[in-house]
Image 1 (cartoon, rainbow, N blue to C red):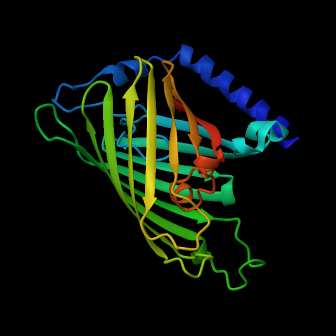
Image 2: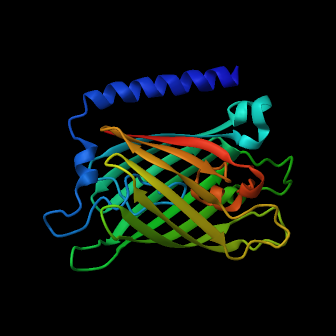
Image 3: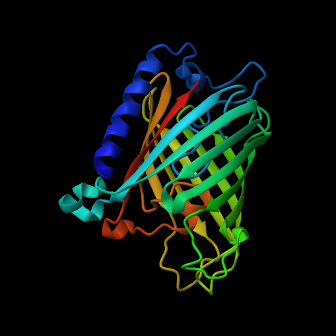
Length: 289
């Protein structure tokens, strides 16, 4: 029943998004193809708010409202028996609003660990044509794990459900076809199940996109966890996929060794292994209103 409901949900959302894109008045393609704005700042470094899993330096424009539905299915390693992962799924619903051109606030809910998170993304400096060489954006998130229970953690308190994350996103659009990003990351988990894992954790992320056509880009990102516990079973997340722009929204096809989609989750809980074909397929469907 869950699989049938999931498939019906996907079909429903695809239909809704397809219809609304026909009547969209503001062509997203105009924004994406514009390289330099009137104030000499470089735009359209990335098509979507995320490169793949890693946050990009793109923000929502002022008064733009984003609705994003994301799915990550089970591992492809399951083969035909698990319908190559389609029998299993995690889902995330996200809402983002551009309060100004430099501030985007968001709220999301993920089925993975039944996690809620609130986020803030804010532009500190923009890349300029023949001027400042990079875009610098700050990103902060607070996530709440509502799945954890006192049955598993007898001394559990509400504070133990919280994880705090901060990123500094630094990107450069080198040409119409190539954009790259570097992202130092700090996050703090109030509760860690592994006694060898520090609560304060550090990572460095990187990613980029290569334009294939006016509507399609190939994207990749990777995060190296700098102080992951030596006995951890989790891996560093490597994700790649394609952005497909369809006039009213961006459709992202994704392959990753991480099934979680919220920011701290995909960094700390990447359970797959690319070398063994243990990879999760999924998509992000973004609609702008």
